[in-house]
Structure formats: structure tokens, C-alpha cells
Length: 157
Length: 318
Image (cartoon, rainbow over all chains, first blue to last red):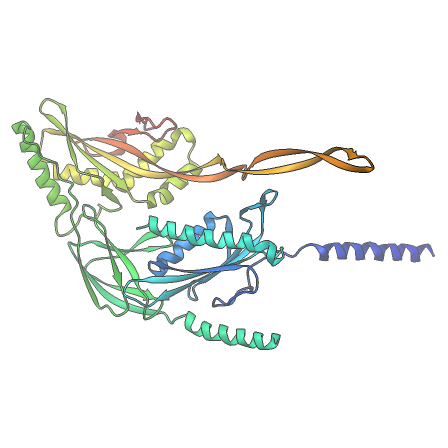
């Protein structure tokens, strides 16, 4: 009888441990989240702008910009013209400073024309928040990246 | 409805995907410059030189409409940036010389005017010859060369230069990590000497060898250095809290009303406590090279302002 009780207790402990493990929030990653071309997303924010410069110049500047904004690059494919990543950039919430985990993707497309120009699309989402909560943060992030990219490219000329 | 949206999304993504990644094209393009210069490109924010003109350069393009920017670099000339496209077969470009010759002044004594003219001729022969000296690479003159008088009848030629940004990554980084703090100025001076200043000093000494009145060559080499510092974020965020302190009743006649009283406090918090900021400052290392002996690092005078006070002080060469 005692052995049965012990077995039951052991099974309960194991199930609690397992359930504890499974309830740990999964790591948020951008890998596999975005396709090879920018497709309108149901959540988050996005922005598309055109920049003067060659593909290499805009690509290098964008990688510097995301690093300076405190987010990481997780997946990069220069042949396609896309890199994605995640991070927890600084943000302002209702109660003060806060950290919101974001995933983002940046797409680069060379445009035809006399002068080299590149169309850049930035998409971001805050997967741990409801869309209405995260929309403001992703909007700020996307526009900060676009503005910083413009500043970085302007400084290189 | 959802399946229709999914199919539309799939079709859109396939259609967009086919046009997004283009086929890479490699073209051999002949680049001719006047005068001869290094043909370089910027890869991952770093200058990488492909060849010396005239040369057939193989360039990879992302597609038929793609463009690359090449940098034509030569010491003594302004860097020229040109666009190349897959359709180009030959590109020609002329570089503009920098005004680095000694400036003349009408009231200068005759011996100064004479030596200035002599130095200008020799500098032009060294820097503006059709074939550039192989060792003069990776730096640029900042302003014009200066003639200084060390004693009556004795002169020094001062060449202010700025070294390439690669010096920061290739040399300063390893020195910061591996050399003790007290020996760093010497190590930085040695790296500058071996990479840029030594070859320049030797070339200037050879060029000015016939002029005995020049007793020293001074090379002032500027370099930039990144420092990482923790800075306080000065922006603040205002918020208020309400704390219940009690309640009281008020009323007239039969009407009694309970009123809660709160203490409202307003706070200002910094938006971030401290942030890691990178600052890039420019420092200068001055090398005084006597023309009487061979230019060897151990024999040159070295001064540097790469110290917390930013003062130009003599650096001991241990």
C-alpha cells in the first residue's frame, strides 16, 4: 500500500515538473516567422521607404542601425535581401521605462533607375502582447529604424 | 473565407518571391584612372582594394539593374567615387590633386622662398608622379605641408596626415586588449610607425636628401579611437500615484455623502538608468625624424595626446 502511495506521489511530482517545464514561455525568435518577400502582416507595424545608395551601402548601414538599437540579427540572407532578428529595445510604457520583446524583419530591393536606390521594408511585432498593446511599440521601433537608417546613410556621404 | 485569404497570401508571396531575388551577374570591367590609383570597394563598412588601375576588375552584381560604387584612392589626391553597372565595359576617371604644397608668402626671406620652392618640387615628384610609391598607402594628407624653422638656417618639414579607419580595428583593438596601459602609447606609436609613418618618413627623407638645411621631418599622424563609456540618460518620465489617506462624511440635513481623500504624488524617473555609448575621438602622434640618420623607430622623437588630459606629451620608447 505504501509503495503504491509512493508511486502515485512520484508520478504527481513528475507531472508537476513536466507541466512546469511546458509552461515556461517559448523563446521568441524571428527565424521561420517571415517569408522571402514582404507580405502584409496581421499584427504589428511596418514601414516602407526608399533610400539613395547602392544595395551594399544600404544593407551595411541597416545592419549597423539594428545593432545600435539593441536588437539582434538571427537570420540573414543577402542574396534574397532580407534579415530578421529579435531583441528587447528600450521603450516607454504607461508606468515608465519598460522592455518589450520584439521580432522584426528587414527587406531590401534594388530599384531600377539612373541613380541607385533601394526600397527598404521594416516589419516588427511584439508577440508576447496583444496586438493593440504592442502596436505603439512596434510603430515606434519601425520608424526609429527607418529614421536612423536615413541618418546613417546621410552621414556616409 | 480564411482559406481564400490563405491562398491569396500564398499566391502573393510566390509572385513576389520570384521577383525579389535576382540572379547574380559577374562582369569584368576595365577601370582607367588619371593618374594611377587604387580601385577599392566598401565591404561590410570596410575599405577593400581590388586592384591598381588600369585594371580589369571582376565585379559581382546582384542583378542586371544593380549598381556598385567603387572608390578610387591615391595619397595626395581627393578620393573619387564612381558607379559601375553590369552594362559598363570600361570606365575612365580623373582624380583631383590635393593642395598639399608649401604655401608661398611674399614677405618671406629669400632663403625660405628658395627652400620652399625646392621642397615643393621634391614633394610633387614624390606624390604626383605617374606611378605612385608602393609604400604610400592607407593615409591621407590633412591640409598642406608646413615648413618650420628650428634654428637660424635650419628647417623642418612638417607633414600632417590622417591614417585610415582600418588602423583602429587592425591595430588599436589588439593593443587595447593585450598591452598594459603604461606601454600602450609606445605600442600605438610603433604600430603607426611600422604601418604608415615609417615608409612616409623614409620616402620624404629620400626625396629631400639633397637639401642639407632640413634637419628633421615631422610627421603628425592623426588616428581615431573608439571609447566605450557609460553615460547617464538625462531624459525623464513623469508619473503620478494616488494613495488613499482616509474618508470623511459631509452632507446637509438628511443627505450624507462619504468622500474618500487621496494623496497625489508626482515622480520623475529617468527613462534609462545608464547607457553604453561609443565615442570616437581623434588623437595625434607626432614623430620627429632627424634627417642625419636612418629613420628607425628607436631614434625618432615621439609625442602623443592619447591620454586622459589630451595633452601632447613625450612618449618614452621602452
